[in-house]
Structures are given as structure tokens and as C-alpha cells.
Amino acid sequence: MEHAVEQSKVAQESAEHEITEYGVKQVEQKWATYSAEAGSVISMINSGANSAEVSDFMRLQHITWLELYVRAVEDSEENGLSEAGLVTLAEALAADETLTKLVVYGEFGAQGTSAIADILRTNKVLSSLSLFSAQLGTEGSAALADALRSNGALSDLRLDYSSVGAKGLMALADVLRTAMLTSLCLSGTQLCDVKQVGADAWNGHYTAEGVSWLADAMRANTTLLNVGLDHNDLRAEGARAIADALEANCTLSSLNLRLNDIDDDGGVALADSLANNTSLKHLNLRDNQRLGWRTAAAFEAMLLSSKAQLVPLFALYPESRSRRGGKKVVIDDEMQNGRAEAATTGGATT
Image (cartoon, rainbow, N blue to C red; front, side):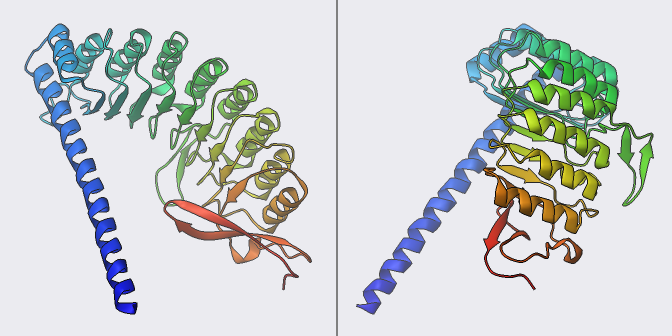
């Protein structure tokens, strides 16, 4: 009997391995297809194909997902698309009805950004746009914001490590009041006009003005579900502005404030703002090493006395443990599959 059970377990594990391996192969095949399609589009444009030819090719191949690298210098020998080539692609995508996801890497500037904005103005099916390391600045961010005013299809916008800055954020925040975005990621976009240049070194003159504008927009926004503001040196002032928004916002489900040098003043403000918030489920405050016991105690009190469904995530340093009798909320530093776990235990603390 035991032998039969063991054989059954082995068979099940073998089947699960085959399923997992098949899933991996599917992903690899799909990625190879996307890479080949992107390579073909880049090759066509770099070889002088016009926008109509590129458009026909994408329509015939039914390309739904495109990832491209845009080089910053026109005469560079690097692989990828030039900014002028990105203009051609924008023209090709004007009436495209198949592409739903566009991912663009590269430190391109005004010309490339203008082309991306043109895509948003004319394309009616693109639902996800990611720009990594783009040199947007105030002008580029304003161009994207202006394009979003007339775009009703885009739901996911990522601008990771693209230089938005405080004034650029103000332009984007203004349109967020009415835009239909459900997910916005502004990781490392210098929202407070400071940029990390070393392990503990930042350049620039700190301002929370742009974050305040974003907070005002978040108070009025009813579509955003996920917002990423990690690695922007928001500090306590920026955290308090976001806290004010959370008091009024009733739709946001996930907020990432990791790596923002937030201290206990900011942490307590965030905890207090969530007393009556039932929509936010995940708040990431990890790697804000100035958070201490005051923040832990504030979150404990809020979670035990309110209807909040929140799972707060932040590193539990020895000095940040809440020392109270009765129940305590332990915010664990362990992560599994990219998600931290929160555990609630009973009994007196020691």
C-alpha cells in the first residue's frame, strides 16, 4: 500500500514537472516570437521602410506586443531604433488595431517622446505603455500628459527611471484627475527633483511640490488601482501629502512607497490616514530604514481598531517592534514570491 502511494506521488510530481516545463517552454517560445517580431520591425525601419509598409507588416503578422530599444544618438553603431525611426513607428501605429502593449527602452529625448505622444493621440487600442530610462523632463512629461487627455484606451502606464521631475509630475498629475489609467508606475523618476548618485548620496534640491499635486489628483481619481512611487526620496513631507490623499481615495488597492527615506513622522501619518480606508490592500514601505517603533505602533493600533483590509509591508528592525500588551501585529521581513507576509499573533509581548 505504501509503495502504491509512493508511486502515485512520484507520478504526480512527474506530471507537475512536465506541466511546469511545458509552461516555461511556452513562455520561451512566446518571448522568442516577440523578439523576432520586434527585430523584424526594427530591421524594416532601419532599412528605410516607410510607415505604410511597417503598418502592413504589423497588421499581417498580427503583432500585439512590441518591445524596442531606442538609441539616443543618431549616428551610433548600437543596435536598436533611432529616434527618427521611432517617428516612423508612431506613424505606422496611428491606425493600428492589433498592438495592445508597447515597451520602449533607451535614453531617448524630445523627438522620441514626441513620437510616443503621437501614438497615444491617434492609437485607439494600445492599453499598456512602458518607457524605461527615457529623458522625459518637464517638456516630455507635459507632451505625454497632453496626449493622455484624448486617449481613452490606455490603462497601464510605466515610466520607470525616466526623468519626470517635480514639474513633469505636476503636468501628469493634472491629467490624472480624469484619465482612465488603472495602473501607474513612477519608480525612480526623480519626483522630488533629487537623483541618487551613490549608496547614500543624492543630487538636486528637494521639493515635494510635485508630489502634492499628485496627491491632490489621487484624491479625485476613481480609476487608479495600483500606484508605484518607489525610489523617489519622498521623505516625510511627501509621505504626508500621500497620506492626505489616502484619506479621501476609495479605489486605490496597491501603493508602493519603498526606498523613499520616510521616517516615523511620515509613517505615522500614513497609518493614521488609513483608519477609514477599506480599499487599500497592499502598502509597501520596505527599505525605509528610518521607520521605527512609532510607525509599527501606529499601524498596529490602526489595524486592530479599524475595518481596513490592509497588508502593510515594511522591514521589521529590532527598534521598530511594537511593545504592547495584548495583541500585536508583526510585519515580517520575509518575502515569498515577491510578496511579504503579515502575521497577527495573540498573547502578551515580551
